[in-house]
Length: 160
Image (cartoon, rainbow, N blue to C red; front, side, top):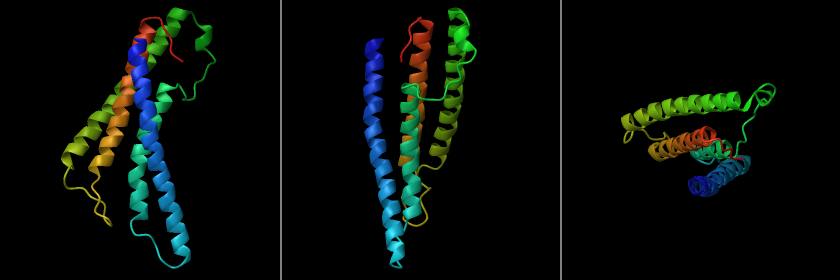
């Protein structure tokens, strides 16, 4: 199990590099757009380029945050409960999370299938499909991380 978790960590950490490049690209587009407006010229498609980079950045960031347990956690009651009840609550959290993210993947895959070849940006004509695919890959990665967490909780092991 540690081997599988290690592979998942390496894949997600590698995808963080891709997301960082997308975020840097967004920042550069915004900076160029702001500077060129000062000289009376606007960068065509700046809004579109920035908009297209967000699913890549956010999808990977959510998967990374899920993997590193970086989400906000309220620890008032659960740590005071017996270990068995804590495991039941953690299992329930994982199952609900998998269900919600799986529903998003299902809806997103349907949308991607319907609009695969026809939907493009207005100004630059860039297809949305690769960016929607990146978003779906991020969501599927979250499902996989939550599934690994569920297996670890059920096998009485914790990953931090």
